[in-house]
Image 1 (tube, rainbow over the protein chains, first blue to last red):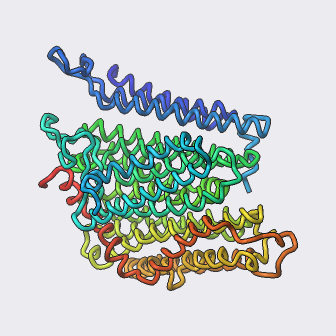
Image 2 (tube, each protein chain N blue to C red; image 1 turned 90 degrees about the vertical axis):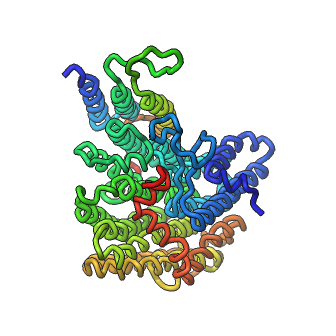
Length: 114
Length: 526
């Protein structure tokens, strides 16, 4: 049970993110929801690589024993960087929407619907 | 004649050239707008040449393996890694090379077109930098043999694509479309990453060939398959996740739309690669007929919903966007029939033909759809409106555009001797043997497509010259050249389909269906 705690946390965070995206009308909050899902994915990746009692995967002068998996950590790092890029891009879209329509509410984005 | 070092490192150059060119573009722009455009054009031309070299190498000598950071490109498994290919490996088989050629040709034509079509805009250096980055994303997705690397290129593709959709802002409308596209792409990307995490957690590898050999098809693998296919189908704009396509395609600059079509097809390639290569080894455990039928039903729905939504549209680009959804259905139908028959005796007789038809259609679609979007852009460039009800009589002043539009429209409707006919005929013939009803549906959709484009042609070009368009002239030469390049390919591929199918399409279909060869090329032996 206790070993599954990180994965339960992943599910909870991702669910909060999904609920935020579905229920909030403010575009900034929707982007925040997306960031929450991204955080959940990052936590998921890191927890995948965790080994109970494992040490940091640095090979130089490493003591004997299990190491945590390094690949998922590298993946997480990459995803954090990608996440910054997407969040910045989406927020700049929100900014432009606000500037043009005078509101950052998803309700104002009706002009495309036909 | 081509230096050995270029041939040997072609897979790395395929990514490096456009990526470096993209980041240098804003700096080059300081030397003047003309220099920057020449630079961007040169970069796409060189990329196209490299894609050509790669295709020639792959078709002549078989799959290219390029291991980044290794002493030799072919050294896939480092000696101290315990038999796991830990490095990022580009695995370019005939299918990847085929997709690479599509992206490279399209990229060059679009860049040529954009030189003239975007000249009234500000921030052009960013436009060309993003265009090159989008090309990097597409080429990377189709070349890589590494799951995580695939995700990274998918994200490059999404970010550059979303930024380009919003490029013209247009009072916020384009930003809305870009917001939608960016949101959907990011969510899709995260789903893909989670699925990759599920696979890595079980098999401890990210290399597609390695995961494929270890694949057990547990419940988690099933979930990962569903997540990957859903997310990538969403990005390729298939029904029922097509809602973003009309907005993004309709409101992006036309040159970008033509390239976004290719970007969507790179996602479609991802679906095929995952189904065939990653999960292809578990023929016994996985019910291929069911998977095939799911793809077929998605395809038929896309075909039908796309075309019926297209008919009432009066915005020319929205109309074309719905047709793009409809045409994606043909690719899914062809390949779906191939999947359904995989491993049976019928696969070698007509299943492979259906797959070839579907794959050939990817190429043809990129060419004629790109051409159509570019002609729509040319019309909008001169008239300033995308509303079909306000156009008319443009045939008097824009003869070349009219000719190119005619070629594209006949190709998309599947009229001989254009390339759309060649691939659709292959799909009809083989699908008819599989299930006659599906072939009939495909033909009906083609007829509806033709009807829709006859209406568009009439609305745009026919009738008397309208007074408000009295000043309209033909578009500048670079735009005509960009359209002309695609038009020539549309006609050539329609006149000589047998040569193209035998030389390019069949190896691609065979490579996709043959999972063993893919694994063997990376891991050796097997």
